[in-house]
Each structure stands twice: as structure tokens, then as C-alpha cells.
Image (cartoon, rainbow, N blue to C red):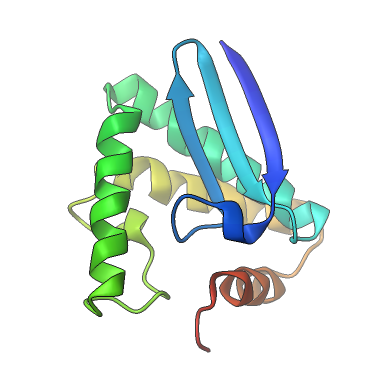
Length: 132
């Protein structure tokens, strides 16, 4: 498997996120918000890799994950959820287990790199337009 990681402008993400992945044949594509501090981008990369790995091991496909994210985006638009609610924590989410473990690794990476967790959350929320 080849893994391609790219940092892109926030407004080019497919969903309300700072990190995204999809599998295309034998290629894993990962996209991370370019506006983030390098330590934060590194933490997001670990999150996405862990989330993908757990999904892959469980047989959860990109199609399933993207369909859920598209549903959740519509729910954001209809006002069912504020943007502060992450799709990955929803009990209906097919990649929930991966998201939970990815979030744990993300927090560990932030700690190991000596970055601020609250600063990280603030930066992510600001990029995604989350009201604080």
C-alpha cells in the first residue's frame, strides 16, 4: 500500500474536518489542513492513520465512512448538530472505534511534541468555524 499525505487549505476539505482519509485501490490518501502548526498536523496524521487502520482491519470501507460523513454534513446543515459535535463520536458512525482511538493517539502526540492541547483544540475549532 502506498500512502500519500497532503496538506491542503481548510476550504478544500470534503467534509467539516481538519483531517480526512480515503482508500483508492492500493493507495491511502490523507488530507490535513495546511493552516495548522506542524505539530498539530503531525497529530492529525497519527489520528487519520490509526482511524484508517482500525477501519481496514474491521472491513469498514471508504464508501461506508464517506456516506456517513455526507449524512452528518446534511445534519449540520439542517441544524441537528452544532459544528462542535464531531461525526466520529456519533454512535451510528461506522468508523467510531477508529475515531476514538485516533483521538487518543492524537492527544498523546500533542503531549509528546510539547504542544498545548487547548491550543490545538482552539486552532482546529477556528479553522472549522466552530463557535466557542
